[in-house]
Image 1 (cartoon, rainbow, N blue to C red):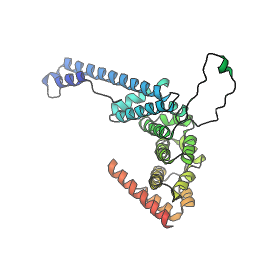
Image 2 (tube, rainbow, N blue to C red; image 1 turned 90 degrees about the vertical axis):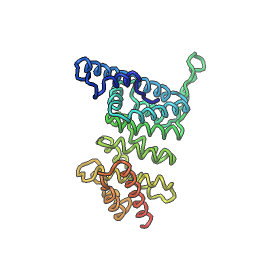
Image 3 (cartoon, rainbow, N blue to C red; image 1 turned 30 degrees about the vertical axis):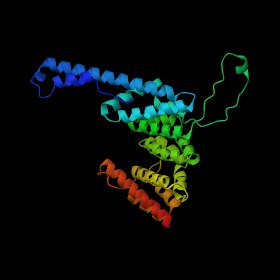
Image 4 (cartoon, helix red, strand yellow; image 1 turned 30 degrees about the horizontal axis):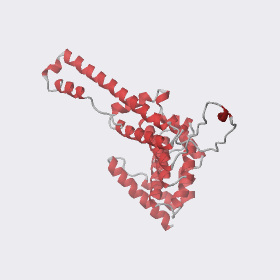
Length: 301
């Protein structure tokens, strides 16, 4: 489900090129404005259709259908992220209740499993069948977390929607009970929903999120890649809240020193200040290297 450029738009744009002398005419300017308007309307229709199609499957009762919908939404978000114009249009759609992605995730794929007992047997004697929703699989939860991460990075108000659905509590529960696949995606999602969101940061502090991450990174029997992901999480979090003197997370340095030791905490603080002037690829490489050094310090002491 990728957004495509209209063929007619390219053709008209070629005729009304910057090099063309006719572009100076008022008529040419009107044509260009019309093309831009039509192109924007087309993109909005495509975005709306993509969201409706993906959400239809993501809200299904069966896990395999929800997985298909989540994959479609994830590909859609990657396509949207390619330009500022499509990001703006996506943000507009999230003001429409039936097109909001985050609530759908927490109502279905990220919904905490409960013991669904049959309260009565009325469905046996009536015409309405009993609706049974299949539980979320590991792959479904991981995909839902990736979609949540993308929504919060592209649309800042999605962090408020996530807070409304108690996202931090749900994610901390996933982090402490699920497998490696979901835990890795969960750490990335946690960073995205806590960026510039005081409410979610307060929830993270109240849920003792630092203790959960510290417990994972200290476990030498755990998957090495997941421990590295925990190190990257701590580096990003420390770098984001560095120098904060007021809650939430004002005492994060003391917490990490208590949980991981003074030497490891000092290394995390120093490593979290890696250069912000690097390009994205270099920053990712530097982050991975620094996370590896954090693990080495933990294994030594």
